[in-house]
Amino acid sequence: MNDWVYWLIGLIVLSALFKIFKGKIKGRIGETIVLTILSALPKEEYRVLNNVMLKTERGTTQIDHVVVSLYGIFVIETKNYKGWITGTDNSEQWTQNMYGKKYLFRNPIKQNYGHVKALEKLLAIPENSFIPIVVFSVNADLKVKTDRIVLYTVKLKKKILKFQEKKFTNEQILTFENRIIMANVDSKENRKEHVEAIHKNIKEDKKHVKAGVCPKCGGRLTKRKGKYGEFTGCSNFPQCSYTTK
Figure 1 (cartoon, rainbow, N blue to C red):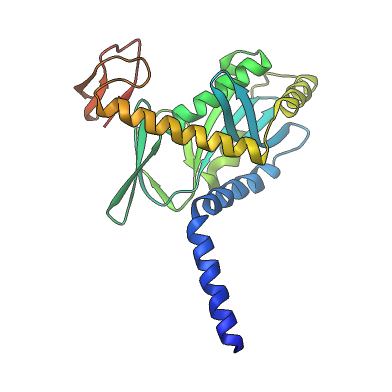
Figure 2 (figure 1 turned 90 degrees about the vertical axis):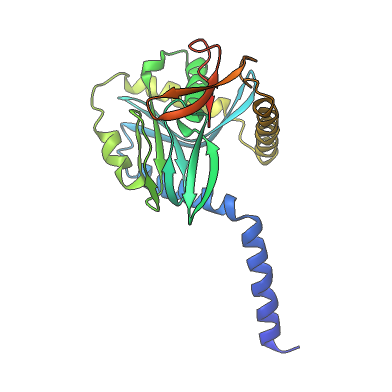
């Protein structure tokens, strides 16, 4: 068999593998870029932890990056998406609009809030000790309506360094770092279980929404008009803030 045939077969195999693992590869690229940025922070003031998986009452929660610092604990969720990104603070899902096609994904602000609550319980410190940040690739065009910290990767380091009010001592941040390391259950098996649980929850939520039932509290879903237009929300508002399009 000629060399060019082997080369062609190899190219076809690589192309197929890329399509299968495209999402994971893109996610890893985004996390690696953020890791490089975080690695440039002064190590005596900032302790960087990556791929942290913690056990919670509902299973596990996976955190891309945690930066334990004298100025607070930064909890960072990375999204390596392209196209227009739209969404609000309270919406359950955000939208990626790319080449005229729309894709829904979980609201990263709410996703990151779950990470904060898990760390809050682990470290036994108040919620205002944490600074949640959602970071998008520069390939995205952010059009989100939010007062939270949602920014591009290139602005991450500058934003972190803006926080200069000391909240902890060096001894405290070392203690927090060790607690997180000891609690981290990240492994290939746990990651697989975590992903399977997410997919299962998404399917269950879709079933509830289709039936007009709030997947969070079991209330009735109704059409309402808000600041940014019409949306579907839970009838138990304000006790339940679930919304969807």
